[in-house]
Structures are given as C-alpha cells and as structure tokens.
Amino acid sequence: MNTDTIQDFTVTSTEHDTLNLYQALNAGKTVVLDFFFTTCHYCQLYAPIIEQSYLNHGAGSGNILYWGIDYNDTDPEVAAYKSTYGVTNPCISGKDGNGNSVISYFSQYFNLAGYPVYAVICPNKKVFWDVNYPPVDTGFNVYLDSCQVFGVIENVMKNPVTVYPNPSGGKFIIEINNNPLRIDDYIEIYNMTGKKILETTITNRNAEIDLSDSPKGIYFLKINHKEKNYSIKLVMP
Image (cartoon, rainbow, N blue to C red):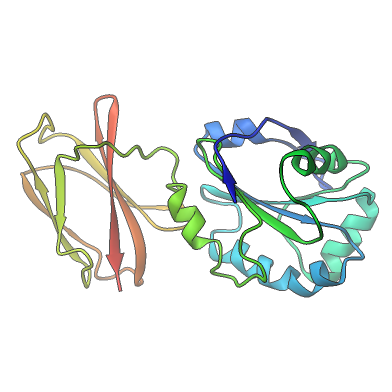
C-alpha cells in the first residue's frame, strides 16, 4: 500500500537525538520506519535482518535512514532491546521519545494490525506501507529505488542523455543529445547507499565512465545542469 503524502513529526531517540521527518526528507533522505515493541516475538526474531539491511545501506551514513518507532515502552526498555538484539539504528521509545504519537497517527491512515510493520518514506513524502514482510535484508531495495533514493536527483520527461550499454560490465558511454546541456556540466555517480563515488565534468558529447573497479550492483548517474538534474540508473549485473 502507498500514499502520496505524510505529515511531519519530531521524535527523540534513546540517544537523545532530535529527529524530524521533514528535515530529513527535505535533505534528500529516504526514511525506513520499523514499528515495533520490545516484547514482540517477531520484532525480536526479525531484528537482525533489519539490522543487516541497515548496514547494507550505509548504517545511516548516506541518504537512507532507518528509524525504529516503538510502542509504549520507555527509553531504558528500548535501549535494553537494542543491546539484546543487536540493533544499532536510531530508535524512539513510545513513552519517552514520542513514538506513541507517531504510531497513533499512522494507525489512523493505515492498517496497523500487528507488529512489526515496515514503511518507506520517500523524499517527496510518498509512503510505501507494510512492505518487506516477512523481511529479507534486500527487501526494501525496490522501494528505495522507486523513491529515487538520492532525493537530489530529478527525472525529467525528455532526458537529453543516453547511456549505453546499460546494463554493462562497468564501462558506460554517455551520449549527450541535441539539448541545452553544456560540455562543462558536471556529473556525479552514487552507489545504492547514497555515497558519491565519482565526480567529474563533461568534456565531450560521448564521454566514457569506467566503473569496472566498483562492485556489481545499481548506481545512479546524475548530471547537474543549471536548475535541473538529469538522472539515469546504471546497472552492473
């Protein structure tokens, strides 16, 4: 299930950090929410899988954030849960961190029949609800991709850039069509964690990007041109 918008909220983690949803989204972050409570059997069972997914996506260092939203427990109870089940992403307790209010809001608009429940919120405030259940560590990827993980990237209907071959073993040709792109526009390459792995300027209309030394996977090519950003997904199978 998905919806096109979500209201803002502010919470405080068990580490006493203030987290604001819109601030994160407006900064181009995608937020994965894990709704849980500390004595929930399946929350405990699946916690290591969500932890692995969190680590796979940069452990909060890139443009993908994971927040645990607890129901009806205190900060010490949630801290003990994190320690016991190896959870390292920020968590918000229901009673002390404002988690109960967040869960109350989501319960008004979505079916929250049990725990855990997982949601992905895109930078444009689109929500994918009750996804990746039962969870696998790669189960959020399709939603993160749909969100255009790096909110700084903007697709346009008529993309003046062609990349081929795509998929590729690592070498991609960037062809600039007859459009108002300039030779001195610069390009960036991001991996799936939101980490920038390459930045350079366009020097000709058939430039080559060589990612042969990078791991296989999905990358994003972003071309920065005036007020618009053109993007293409790069696939290395």
